[in-house]
Image (cartoon, rainbow, N blue to C red; front, side, top):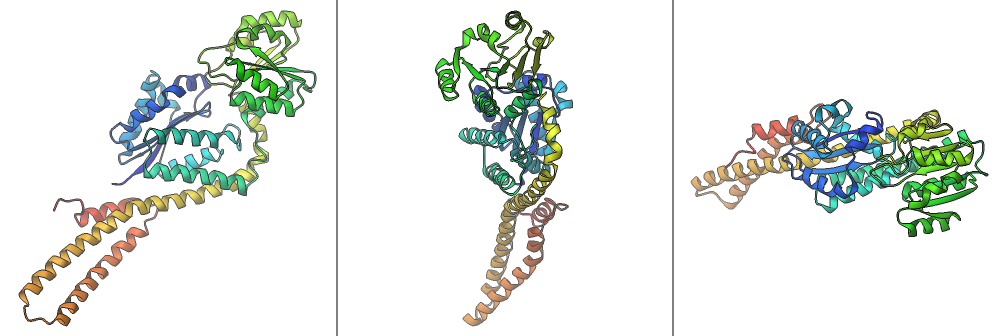
Length: 424
């Protein structure tokens, strides 16, 4: 059966952080989402990808148009967002373009900050989650592993990674634009997950004076604070310590705001108006947007970090172009494999059909010619086999040489012309 690959989703270019928050599938519901899609008629394989900057469904299907409609409905139903409200923000890729998009995402060519390293690890995790619930088969298994190898090629053969920064380092770069230097500044990390840890490393690398770490699991706050020679702060007490913080970075998995205007108003009174710079690295957001209305409090969310990426884009343009060439080459390599995957059963079925006809007709003929010698029988066998091989040569050659324009045309035509799907 012919398989196509489709991708339906939205990202930081097509949808605001507000909308992405609505569509975001929580981690504890990801496995269920993969299972439900896999059980949908017409979707034979699927991987749900859900990061701060994108929510996408990658699917293998024999019915691409119907599958796209079902995925759109799924995304709308999943988070109770009306489908018609999502439509303007969704993109759809199919076939080679879907493969190209996946390879670009994995290689960080589609990231807010081109070249950031986190996306590859995230894609590997989403692939593993889908594999763990059995929603991945031959096509997406090969496609994702190819995507991982493409990302490795891009990082090995281009300088795109050396010229890129992560979202966390972009946040620190933004802090350096507000404060001339960080040596006399104190930072507070609210949330000690991966994003918080990366932000801490970048702050230390840029000479921040001191760090406070607050986390719901206090042991984790203590562990990270010890590693960075900082101070752990109990999560329920962090508002009392805001008066000491010049930089506040939010990176928790909370689904509601963990910081609103009131605690910051109190902190600003004690700071006598000295500015506080707040960076919200989370989706859903950790900080109430109304914080930005306070005097001398500057709040930036994850979408704001795109500006830094744009500033650095010129430096990375040449390396990105080289990376795009690698992606294009690897897309064709994968597509040849997929074509071959579809062609082989047709070639086998065609050979078997003609061979069964040859064998049946030869048996009839030999049954009516009782006086043939073994040598004559062998000659008839060789002659009929040669005829079948000559008849098969042209169609098999065409099947093996499918190009982008023909797509599945020759496979479908061959199966119809020779009745390969008909019951005997």
